[in-house]
Structure formats: C-alpha cells, structure tokens
Image (cartoon, rainbow, N blue to C red; front, side, top):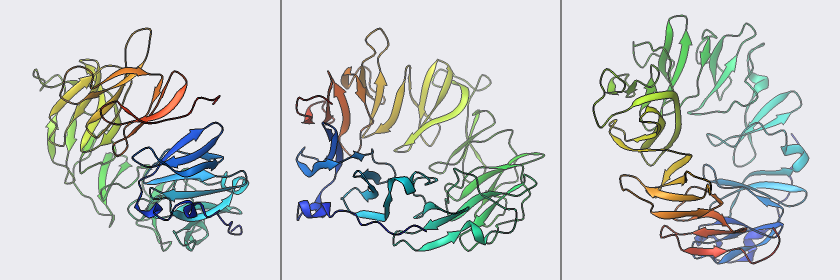
Length: 349
C-alpha cells in the first residue's frame, strides 16, 4: 500500500468544530464548509469537496484528498490524488477499497488492512465496483459462477450462482437456473419462494416479479400492484426500478398513472409525481417543473401544490434541514421554508 499522506489540520480553524453540522460550499474556485446557521466554519481553502454520502464527504487540496465526516473529522487514510484515482468504491461497511498492485486491500478507519483479495481462493475475484455490505463481498469464479466472501477470506458458499446482488438488511438475492431466491448472511434460504426478478432489500422490503409485489424479509407478500389488483388508490408499475429510498418511503416507476410512485412500507400509495424527482428528505421531494423554464422546486408528500416554488436552476435533495441550490448563477443553501441560510458572494464561479 502507498505511504500515508498527512492531511492539513483544518479542524484547527475552530475549537468548536466537533459541535457543528457541516455542509460544503464553493466560493470562487475553492471549497469550504458552513454550519446550519450559514456561518463559514472551514474557510474556502480546499480544491474540491463533494456532497455528503453515507455520512462522508471527499475533500482535497491540490495534492491530497481525504474523507471527512459530518463534523469535520478525518476518516480513513488520506492519499495522493494520483493514488486515489484507483479507489474502487466509496467506503462501505466501515471499509475503504484501495489498490495494491494487482490486488485490492480493504482498510478500516485506522488504516489497517482487514481483508485483501490476495486471500481469496485461486480464480475467485471481485468486480471493479464491488464492496462489502453486511460483512460480505460478491465475488466471481473463473467459470463465471458467483458467491460471497467473508472478511476472513472464506467463502459463504462455493461459487454456484449465475448472478448475485449485494446484501442489504441481512438479505441478498441470488439467481439460479430456476429463478431468484433471497438468502441470509449465513447462506441459507430466507424463503422457499423463487422470483422472476428482484430488487435489493431496503428498509425490510423488496420489490419482486416486475415490481408487482412488495415482500418482507421472510418473502411474504406485503402488497401487490398491477392491473389485476388495482383500485383507485393504486398504480401499475412501469420499469421495475427502485429510483429512491429514504425516510421509509420507496419511489418506483409508475406506468399508469405516469410518473414516480412514492409508497410507504405497507405498500400504501402516498403520491404520484410526474417529472424528474429526488429522494424524500425532511418530508420534501425535489421536482423539476414541466414547461420551458425547467426550474426546480420542492413538493411535500401528500400535500398538493409546491412547498417551495420552482425557481432554482440547480438543486439537491434536503440534507438534515438544508438543501444546496443555485439560482441566477449564485450557489447557496436554503431551509425548509425556502429562505436562504447562506449565499455565495458575487463573483465568477
């Protein structure tokens, strides 16, 4: 593995950093972080800073990049930009995948190697985008059969599946010649039922058989959708894609009525929204308005009309009370009322 790169002590910018909730901002061609009040906590000294994902953001100077958490604390190892371009995936399951010659090392927050692909049986390899979830890593054998590897290098089962999905909520779908089955983290069947197709579990639910059924972790049907069971409050699934899951709400494609159907864990339809939508955060959904303006605003699930009128050229989902937006060439953050908490100063961006 490459030598550890030191990260500048940006936490020294404020003695109260650990008490803050941070959001990345761009000022000119540099990046810093504000708190929930819109106060600049970390000055704009960084070359880049990504949006938060799974509680982490990637930040960097000209030569070094790191992951930091929502309170500005460094996580995992820092690295040179050239080195980290080979990083396979965002940290997952408490591990970061980094290249080591022809192998991959999965390191923990302290930089210790927890697992290396060198420990796998001969001919068994992960994919380039693979990651650990629920302690298990999808791997493929030389004869194109799949299974999962544990962090100690042992295999959950011998390679025998035609295809596999990632584990989530303690379940993964695997494909055999007779269909898709759900297995648990011990490798045993979670249900005897087979499915024509299946989407991965989220929040204890999964969509199967072209999204005509929502099932629980035991494979039991929670709700059926489609022509045969439709009544006024239901919908016909379109493309079987789980576009979003957040705050206990699932968003899947709806053929009729057309749009994105937002449903809860009981299968109850909350709302169908037409247009390009986002995830549910703080009860609000980002939506691009129809028509020539194409502006973006926010709607509240179950309530008609706009919660925040469409006036933004670019907007992101709400994140713990604030949303990053851009209006008339100026970036900023708004609260759930639509009022600005912070706006970038006037300058070329």
